[in-house]
Image (cartoon, rainbow, N blue to C red; front, side, top):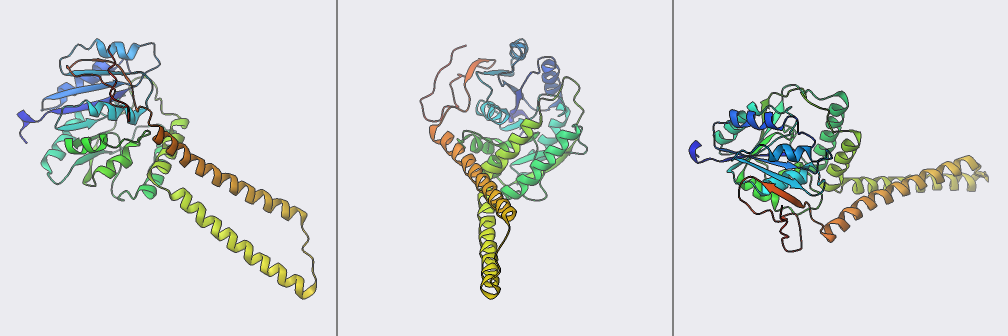
Amino acid sequence: MSKDKTLISVVIPCYCSADWIPELVDRILDSTNYPTEIILVNDSSPDDGATWTAIKQLDKRNVIGIDLQFNAGQFSALLCGMSKANGDIIVTMDDDLQHPPEEIQVLLSSLIEREDLDCVIGRYKSKKHGIIRNLGSSLVRAIYHRASGKPKHLTMGSFRAMRRSVADAMIRHRTNRPVFGPILLASTRRIENVDIQHHSRPYGKSGYRLRQLVKTTMDNLFDATTAPLRAFSIMGTLIAMGSAGFGIVYLYRYLEGGIGVPGFTTNVLLISFFGGITLLGLGLIGEYIDRIVREVRGPPRWHIRETVGNDFDNENEGNKHSPPIILTP
């Protein structure tokens, strides 16, 4: 794959990042040794149009801007941008400059030199996130590793480079609530890590709060596996067997000595315990049913309000069942 024929597409979901988008784009274009297009997806930033205005004002020939009509979430925004990419290699990264654009070349070199790999993921030598973000990320990784069967040596992350075939396979996953990691692992297992730098956030504050951590954890857990239901079934079986054993013991004591089984408090505690377990089980089942209903209904994963840049149509690729809807700027 020669440099003069290899097109790189850098896909970036943007959220309230108007102040530093020009710097981000300039650094990307200065850092790669290959022809590069940049796809900026404004995920309906609640900043009175500032982020979208900043994207439109870039006025660069190799920059594509996509404005989503509603907040689709980081993963859907990524897939939307990937569906519009023209590159032979797709690079995904965050918009906050914690992923140094200068490290893109490290990812590209590692992927292009290894024909046996489909994707490389940046592994940070040292992370510059806050304590809550680091703890939450560690929890998500631990749960995700056990739920998805991810190889132990592999560290997942959002700064990655993948071949066109992998991106196409990921786009074909039509789940309504996509989680990037499980979809990537379902598309290829030929993935390796590359050590890269990770910078402190130079502008603004992270929008990654406890709520997002909880949501990401639940999505990884419920969308990647049925392990919660399986664990609950095992726990229910063990409790039932234990209860039967206790019942036999108390029955034997009663028949042998005529000893009654006192304990109003014990009965109340047992009823409360099993009631809580039952409600927890119903909640888990409800989470899966909710996801099934969303998939069956097939709402669009994203709506494109407007596009700027290269000449491509802005049909609503996110609509799962309906014919494409052309949304004019």
